[in-house]
Length: 335
Image 1 (cartoon, rainbow, N blue to C red):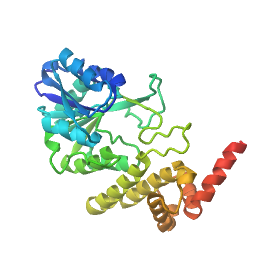
Image 2: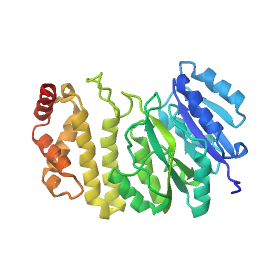
Image 3: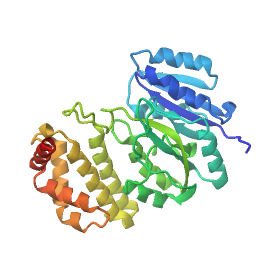
Image 4: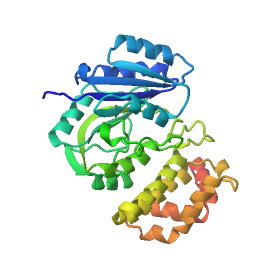
């Protein structure tokens, strides 16, 4: 297949000198033509060796350039990269992850075959040592093309992949109204549910080309050795669920029950992971989560999209969240 379209791959980074080379080189050595590839590292004010590493990479690979920012979150870095990108299609890679050499060739070929604006590869979850971990998203058995309304449903059922890193997306879908939300967590989900309204179909490929490297204690991955540390990703997931409920009410009323299920499950995850010591009266986020679950107690049993286990845990936590968590902790110790 002959390719003519230029792609831009944006790699935001902050103090990731140890992994940046692997991430950037996995993009720079793609089978997709280097002459049609632009790689943009956005350094968010790193204080380690990242600036030096990024500079050396730009000297080694002509298609790679570096943008230096003083500060900002990952969304701000991605947005800066988007505004500088010259490609007709955009991809994103986190600087602690890496991709397979054929990823962008497969994605572009799928976009060309189906005439869509968005394509996605499957992902593999790995440890920092490269060991395979349990799937967070089950890959499709074959290449499928789905309408974006159905894709949204999979996201609300925790079956789809919200990550922008597994995708190649037409530049035209990124407008001032659809840029990464800055200063919040769960930014991929929040933008994805809005962007799906700007296109009609997405191609999903079965090839596991994107490797997500899981680091304990980051995002929504708690470190068991640090029991009192509560990753901010859990609160971000709850806030994202609120946005999803509002969006569904406005544009997809047929998914109202599914969106309620999504909001309840996100809060269940929050309540199952927050340290008991932080379940206090002065914790506004915690109190809000409990209020929501209690307010929708009657719907928990009737929601056909909740599993029996989810219904049981939500009912228990809606009556005595702190007591039930303490009892569960004691039970685990006795076992």
